[in-house]
Image (tube, rainbow, N blue to C red):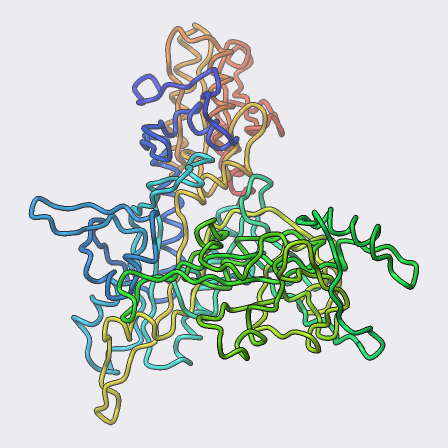
Length: 598
């Protein structure tokens, strides 16, 4: 450590918002350059290399072969798959001196596809799985949590190429199993959840979520053990309600009732229920107007903007991320004042279903009828109070399926305690998670877009089936740090620690340094990685604090008291298992304790 490029910090960085960011900087693993951008220091690179090595070992078992692409890529392949536009402002775009468009790659599906297209042409060449570990870039609006959500990050991405869907499913299962082995070896507490594919496209997709309270994702877990990313959760279809006794729909005056709260108040004041029960927000159907921003396609080279009306129960809050998942790869936002002005039939605060969806489409005089979708919690036959499409007017006893219809069903509202799981096993529970890996069955999306075909046994050109499998290498490292630390510092699992033993020579006696050096030599002869604190004129207290901060699994101390007794003190990073062992036996004892950590 007297020559190691390292400076530990006694104070937390002012802008470190999670423990991993705080401790990785304090312990000298990384240094922040700019928001979401970090320099890797020698200790950090040692841990990063350990994580990458575990990944490479397990992925190699699947038969995958490693390649390496540039991070700087031309625009054209991403334009062919429409992802130049779909990625929106998250994409780093730049021009070269000839004004040609380039990007810093957030992911490399196009490059892998084109590489296989360039080199393979026959079914005999397949299956093949290729992967890389590469730096990726995304222009995060608000980088946070240190390495967990950065603008530059290190990722492993693998891609399988098979001649049919059966081959894709096998490759998917192989990679999924490899991921389970990887995360178990790395000491990560994870859960596998059903997920949406987002801009990646494809059908089947699952995420590996590190279970952490700082996670940005909400993981929803059923009593059966099945789990979903909340954006991918589907609501069980509600049972149809018998509406035969429901009164006919009628208009009612509701002055100054533009909010759910004021509507409920007005209904109870002016139009009390005949059965004596009070009206509540659960009786109301609010209609939200959104703008769907569709990406560019052949028909709309600049993309398009669609106004859609969503009907959802008044006692539930809208979840824009869940709602957006229904429209992927399009983006959504609440309609602007300009959007509403272009549709005067939508009376703000009193929007109903009369001028949207199937009922409006029946009116031949209506042009460009807006789509009307209802939330999945709206049961057929259910009765509602909703907007009357005129200022100060609502309708009551409006029955879905009798008085109005919708163009479709969407997942528009927040999931809450007591909601039933999709598999019917019981009420859902919630955890916070950080996505550390995801596997996709891409299918034919990129093959069709980039014309990747091979000749089959009959000489016919067929598209290649693709799968995609990603792990956030630098994010996993941060999650390990987040899971394995205490108030004193990091506490790395043996599999990723920068060294296996931290040897400290303390005090001023030369004998302590000589004993420590003999131990270091003995450990290295056994192939054990050692971090040796040989710094002269540094107090034992500082050395102890640095050892706790750096977080190597075992600590061995040669100091004044131990040398006098002819012993070496060996203890766990957390102080557990402290024992004084004869100096001549210390290396063997340490080797045994390390073996027990496997």
